[in-house]
Length: 304
Length: 286
Image 1: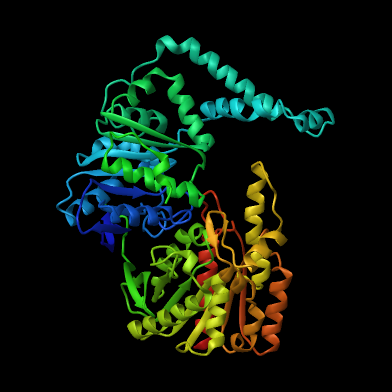
Image 2: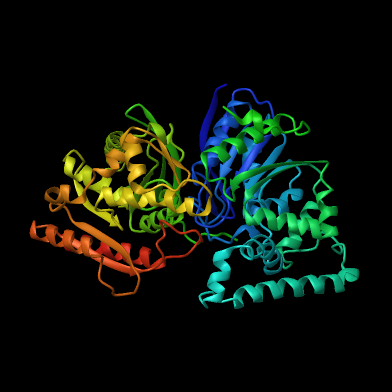
């Protein structure tokens, strides 16, 4: 199926945002608005994942808009990070809806801290009825330590080189002990204060002062659309997210809010899907899910 | 409440049909009079992504000086048509040449070629071709001088990644042999064809010395500490250019290596130094 690619400039609070629209001749699914993770990136980067995703989704009937938020990539303005992109996302969604009027609903797509930005903000836009999020970024010292202890030091403790280094005095154990100690202390503190845990308090105040992980949870607890979680096996970020949801009842409640939640695990993928094979898998799963968010996802269909 | 107090540029993203290829360009156009035309040639693979926001920010700063910048996504990269596996250095050079001609026709302004890393090698080849419109200057950021060395460093990204996985460990020699045999290898998430590897490996900046000596060269390098001398190969080539009658304006800045950053970092020194270098050339011409 043919699709057009049209670059656009989106105005956001006086700054020019650069985006690319992929519009199929026949629209078969909701649209997708994609943002890239913060840091030194733009929408053409990391092996062109977003470009290839958009081209292949558009070829199968999904309109896609990819854009750089303020200060990122090609876009103008001050970089303010993923915690403060609500107006940028709104400007992009509005621009997309007005340029493709036959499209009424959109899905937001992003990985890492772009996933965090999406989870914080998605419920605020009426046209957003779905999320595709990869390895959501929930890193804090506390959850990070728990994951490091579980997946890194637990492995090293069985490793002969580690013990040899330790015995020869080449290994400084204090950072590791500090990390382990901090993780244990955090766990103890959490148990002690578990009975005091609040469910989030009165909603819809200005929440920008709250920790971003809390804002993500509050955001998810208000989002009633469909969610696709894409999780990489070789990513500590994805493990940290699982750790958080697994250990926190209010997060479990928040993740139960969407009308449908699908999850796809990719054991060999890394945080940014930086291999050709994992990019191909992400694209194939996204395509399946967009055409039927309730069907079971099948990685074997990813072979092309 | 507007982000821009007085707008000095507007962004014009568009596709250009060059040599039958549909290539994406982002043009940063001054709101005031246009006094210069600047064609940006990006570095290779992931380096192109990493430094992008710095490049566009630099272009916006240059618009205040009257430069109309055209940022080119070469065939098979960025937003342009095609796949990197179909890319070819000779086609990239022909497309860059067409982009330069298009830009000068569009702006009627004197041309500057701006290349980062291997983009600088491409710029040097354009200069050496003698086919470009008249040049005001070339601007290099951390130019790659030897394609063979660059290729070896690039291959090391694949070898380094294998440190964290089980299984067979490759060496530079085995990778080079496979590329020489025409295989396509995935390096840090980007497929590299034997053809492109062969082309990259044969590039040398010193092959263009004779022609580079005919235009002002602005040469910017990142060093570890402020005031530190440039790397020896750079100093040698700058000396050779001087001996050939060239005018090289050199500046070093201590800032992060923005083409390989994994975390975002600001590098305002690069922007300031670039503006100062171009002002120096403009002053020397007047």
